[in-house]
Length: 485
Image 1 (tube, rainbow, N blue to C red):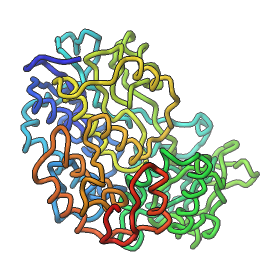
Image 2: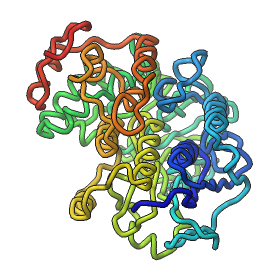
Image 3: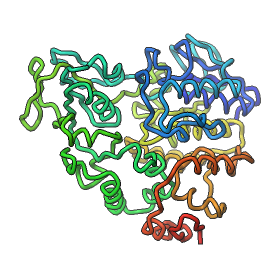
Image 4: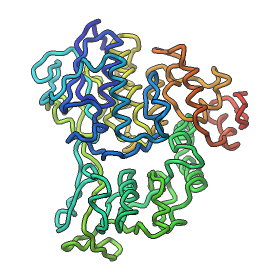
């Protein structure tokens, strides 16, 4: 669907998704209105807002370079993993720099969006859903009978209120491990979960996890290797770099990484090893304040923090729109639906790894499709993709590769001789998507090189370099200064 110049675009939410969507919609020549329910921008990073599940002072799990957009790098004085307040300040500066701030309607919650398009009765030519994926905390029914304090991770206020109180953290996704680790120096902690996962650290030898695990090579591995072979190689890499959880006294995950899954926390496994975190399996029942686990063991605790996920919550979409996309959000590459021209969706997925570059790719893609610069594929292809099952979690590198290909900005490493190695095996830094294609910028290469130079990286493994030819890529010599052959 192509919109006329000056078309009116409504954007729901002024968090990272909404701000980057507004920036690119404005650049495309559209008139933009951003609807924000709270009194300030930032979404989850507006820590004092009722809709925020981020506690004050919490640090990101993603590096400063990957928690930023392609043409507005994070301040150089930010730490490797910035605090939430620094991210909100970054977003506010971005909104000012690109003229987004004056288009935000604060304290304006949206009640209904209907196809056509109308937002609470106001007509628009198109609508972008950018209200965030972490709005509706999900509590497991089994905790309803607990007689102590029960909260969701969304409402976790930091460790101080739990000091010296025995606390059970239920769930071992990133939030569950981060909260258990945050509590461990201050209180007895039980970490309970139904399925053991592999755990990688945020930083190893000075290298942030998103610089090591989410590379183009990793996306090509996932795309081209047989699933069993991919799982075997991935497990070998995880155990070599991060260790097997059993080595720390944690339960052993399945050998199949696809079954076990992956989580992230710097100190969790070390805290399990030193006894400050006790691991237990899933909850079988609760009697007063005593929790009985599926292995028959029991713990009496003062509080339970449930890191048990979120439901999809886009309740402001009218029933006719909701029926088209369904509860699981059937969208072409997480962004469009062929039966809903004029609707774009940003950030309504669960990702492993950084979000900001993915949100920006979606925003840019929506803008160039609606301006007519890039065409969507034909309807038959879109429907075929919609019929395919989607993973519950999108690995950052896999989704980034797909979105950048759709947008036409995925750089071909062989075309950038001196950047070949970092484009293949280095972090998927946002400026890489400005090297060529729609929205290419002359300074992108210099910015990419600056960001690469700011942090160490793990060496390329010879086996990985040799594997490239099996992915339909040119061979590569594993030396850091080598180029594609």
